[in-house]
Length: 140
Image (cartoon, rainbow, N blue to C red; front, side, top):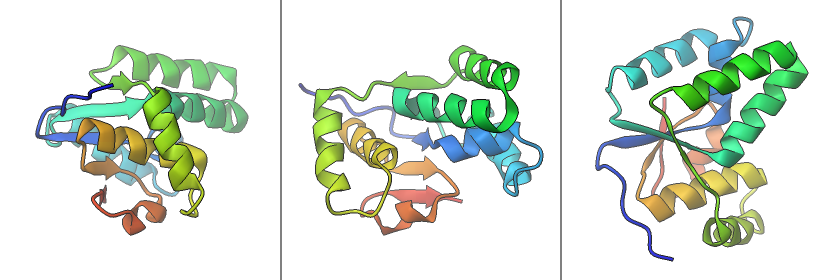
């Protein structure tokens, strides 16, 4: 499968940013609100995430804050200017190969695979693990 490069100015958003954005008690809440506000204002260009990040976000929110909160956050993600990229077979295979050598969750490996396949170089995340991945710039 051939992938086209997404808009030159673009960013991928990790689940930890969405979870912190929605959870006022999260230590990263204030920073997440600032990042999302900047993203919505267009400071990062086009906003992307993946179906795996959506899954992880609503699942973590369900466990931490309940069904109502998970449905609200999921609805926000689906109704926003955010584009959900699919973890297809090519991304899954690349993520599996990364998973064998990187000490990152499989979902994080899918983030890297999807970003690389679509030419996205920046990720909004509080997960320091992305700093060790070549070709990916972690924000903040």
